[in-house]
Length: 78
Image (cartoon, rainbow, N blue to C red; front, side, top):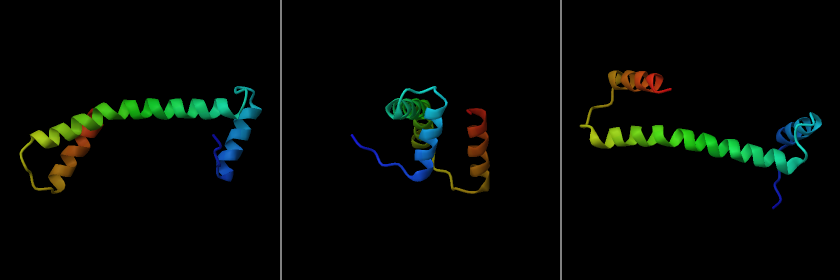
């Protein structure tokens, strides 16, 4: 597989390689993909819970009060 990176990301890869922490470009990309996978797994339960809450709750007109409640819930579950 060949991947084309924009210049800013290519420079990042070069900088990471220069630290000696990674053996090659592939190792950096694998680590980045593992981090992305962990992030997606961490977000999925919260998103699923929010969607289920919406499906099972009564219809409420969307207004500033609803938005404030959603923000408060997001803070409490962060």
